[in-house]
Length: 316
Length: 277
Image (tube, rainbow over the protein chains, first blue to last red):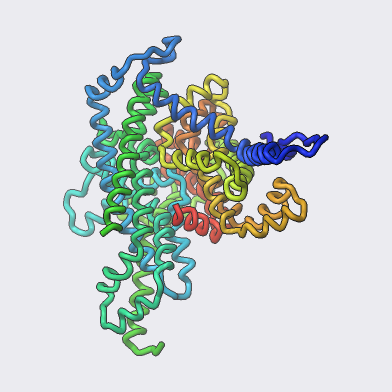
């Protein structure tokens, strides 16, 4: 790692006092050099490994390239045509959306619930906050492995509990095509709720307590206070959480790979995993980049849509 | 506040609810720890045994010989520490440029950083892999270090914090004749200790827990992190339930300790980087 601590500006040798215009130009040049010298160490890595690959990836999705062809060849929309004819792509797209639609509202609801539960003064709250946050610092591999055992269809504790409750035919969870995705969603909600809870808690603290007191005086019950003060007051937080949660959901990879590996069959295969399988395992760089582009458009499109909706809501 | 029986009753009900929810949240941890202290054939019993009948402490001694756990832990620690240090260093350095220096093109550059935060990594991991391959870095620790040490997130978080430090302070230092590098080292770094702690902790935990990066880049076993080691153990011995849970506990323990020690900064970091986005 190289960090230059020396000023990047050469010492100025001033023989004659320079004209004001030159001096101003020198000052600009100097400020540019100083500014860049701060940003450069980070920017070099960022440009080489984030910016360049992003642009390169965009171009790659219109090319045919694999380890066995020396030169990338421009093929126009061929990758996309192949992709739209590929049944696994559609299944992965559907599964990704399925996961997102399950994961986003559930995580947000649970996180908000936990935040509301913790947003009071009570001895020992710190302990509960830590406990609720703990799943988030647990690695996804450990999370996946533990939940796989909890979900064990024959003798896992979850199905034993369901049997005890009188459910005669409990789901097969990760071994059944219909229940594998719900199982993944439950595990992911458990892991992520603490993170968004922290964001909601911070948001709750920005709502002035006077509002609640005034509402109490006016005779508003808890439910009315939640509807008319808490939810509107949390709107900026909720918006932000929604965006973060959406981006994270569309990227889902680790949990699926370890918990179900896309199975049973293709029941839980998701886009990220397909990009990995096609691009890095099969070496179809162009084809995989085309799928990447779809994933990006999906995330970006959803984010932009949310921003539009938010703006319209604010305008009202 | 008066403690009428009604409010006291409500308080007790609330505490009870909190405890029940907390127990539910902790169930997977209880299962993990309790199973890690059992024999393989006692893990799945009907009915479920939450407390092992016999505590098999030897699992925690045996795991080191069953898989090269020590080497995995060392690799994970090396990567997590190196990446956190680099991220804090380059991130706070760049953040100073973005927050406290004025120069043409600054805002455009920052916009480029911001824009990439929203782009999912999966969207450019293929070209990134190809670049790494060209550089001959696939299957080296350096690949993951380079990949994760220069994130836009660190720059963003540090810049947020630097902006809360008043400009007058820096102006005064400039008048006193300190150059920008000194101001960064002598004034900004010491002042931003909480933000550095947040960023360092967040990066440490993320790197330690990362699965996808090492999964793609490390093929040889000597380079593997705890996450890869644990995953491969599960694949090889899928019936060694107890030992798998022992490994899970060991893989989670360091990060939980780090989190418990720096909890306040950790949560602060998430809350501030989150809310102003």
